[in-house]
Length: 294
Image 1 (cartoon, rainbow, N blue to C red):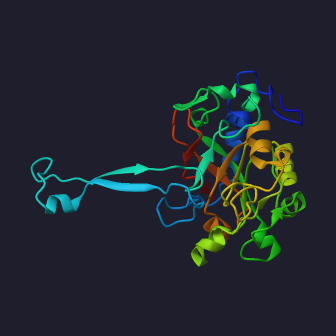
Image 2 (cartoon, helix red, strand yellow):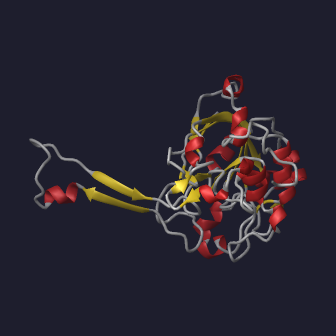
Image 3 (cartoon, rainbow, N blue to C red):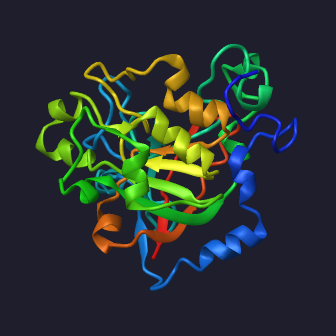
């Protein structure tokens, strides 16, 4: 059992959804009031081989199993004059595309969130706390545009966002989705090597600040919620690791590698956040196309 403040046992001994349990019917209906204009903005980066990703991670593989060139070369039509195209997609979500981390993604010791045995994370998937436990997420989203607050295009690689910086931008209520913009994906277009030189992110205290406010999800446009060094590793000690603070101890799902530039340009702090991960049985993560309804 973890010793620092946590949500283990809070939602029952069998809980696998953490603070997503806060998103009950009344909370969802209340969140829908954050929509004002009805404009829908995608918060996902395109899935492809040329976008931001962590060095060394397997890139998405997108193939056409049959396409127009096959028919031009003499392939037999499906029916009388009927032709088609089919694709196949292989995606490793972590570090390569916009995705949601499941509560089974990271842990310390022998237990997952809420004391579920870590030994039940097997080669075919996790028996507990998998991404298939999430369902759909409809909540009020709150944008923390930290670069805009500081008057910069993007945060520098070594910047670790403090609770004071978050508090100066916005506040969150229980069940909200905290969406943090660092602007770091903009660096990729200038230089992949610079993108890989490190990444800004939340400090451990900022993670605890959000957890204390009972957010349902923490989402960010960087690759790991917390910051990374030039080796693409976190510098924090184990007790300050953002994944352990949020996923493991508080049962707060994480969304990483968002694209937030259109949302930031809209100038809205509050909006409706909608996301539905794939029902991948026992998955540690799922590719995601989160939506902001303004």
